[in-house]
Image 1 (tube, rainbow, N blue to C red):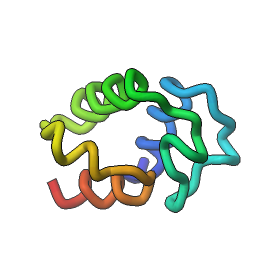
Image 2 (cartoon, rainbow, N blue to C red):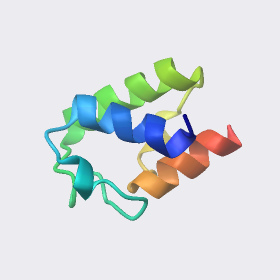
Image 3 (cartoon, rainbow, N blue to C red):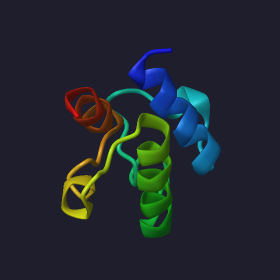
Length: 75
């Protein structure tokens, strides 16, 4: 499973959004309805899934699905 699909699966498990709403340009808060607590939970879920550590100041910059995928692939 590629990075985007893994991220998409985590988003579907953690957010009340529809699968068709998730694409690389989707904004976590504006398009997918994430709030600040959701963002923290997503960060933890991504760290667990990919075995990485995401610094809080980095995650604040990851506002789109595409930015998250790119960050993970570079980690």
